Image (cartoon, rainbow, N blue to C red; front, side, top):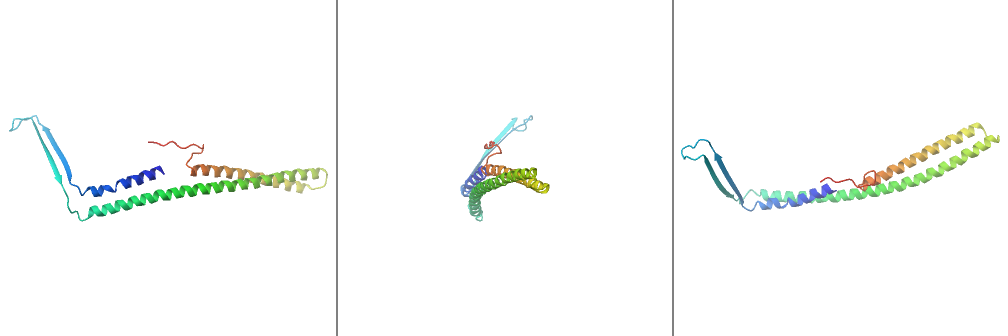
Amino acid sequence: MLALKAAARGRRAGIIEPTLRWLPSLSLTGRYTYTNEAGLTGRNFNWNAGLNMSWSLFDGLTRNNEYSEQKALAYQADLDVRAALRKVDLDVRSAIVSVESQRAGLKKAQVAYDIAVRNAAETAELYRQGLSSALEVADANVSLFEAAVDLVTARYGLGLAYLNLESALGLDPLGKEPELED
């Protein structure tokens, strides 16, 4: 965002450059030479200075076209900044929705895991009393394993959603703002 804002500021500052070409330009030149042979004048050094002023009264409307182009580029840079701000806002909102969705999924997975633990324990107790078969115990244990995998997957998804939210907010994975280099 900082780079886009700086680029937009630069584009706005560049608008004035074509209009400054309506003013005359002034240049100063100078030259100093030294030689080891004196020559006809008898001097070893020679210098001259000059002042040059030029004023282009008509340039085929190039200045006007460049002014319009610079103005349009500045407007485009401002629109790019606005679009980036909207994208950041959308990314943050999407990340918040993702976090809330993952929280709900984690609650659901936790309830399913608790039910699977209770079911496995009850089925094992019924097997010890001879009221259920080994197949039912194995099925309860498979359901417990699947519920545990779903719970871990939901926890991973929630952690990933938090990292995406911090990224959308411009933070690093540790929750701190990254250092800006000058």
